[in-house]
Amino acid sequence: MTEMVQSSAAQLPSSLEEIRALLAEIPDPEIPVITIEELGILRRVDRDGGRIVVTITPTYSGCPAMEMICGQIIDTLAANGIEDAQVKTVYSPAWTTDWMSEAAKAKLDAYGVAPPGSREAVLCPRCRSNDVRTVSSFGSTACKALMVCQACLEPFDWFKAI
Image (cartoon, rainbow, N blue to C red; front, side):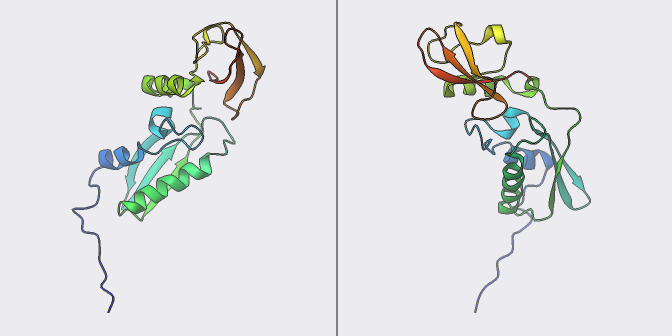
């Protein structure tokens, strides 16, 4: 005989803050050293009756990672006993690199991706030289440019300021 185990209400996250904290730990699929919270795309967590509604904003329209992020949100909620959930994508106001946390920018830099800033302030994340040039306006993702340092000759991505 198979025994059915049900989640008790005590095991479920009881507040929107607890739910947001769970979601805040989801890594960005394209830059796994930062989370969707640090990136600034996790906008809101609300209740609509018994349903949890999570609002996100993509870094740019057509971002290919959004489908995976939506799936990660639904999977995280389900793993924590929340089956009735919806992910809502909003485009206005448009995402901006100003929404990135300072922690995210520091993590990008440590990962070898120059954080967003003005084009004149881009520093090589390896040797810290500002003698850099653009190789391609689009790097490994559309939100990054491929750069090369003229001092150490190493290529690197720069997360473009939007």
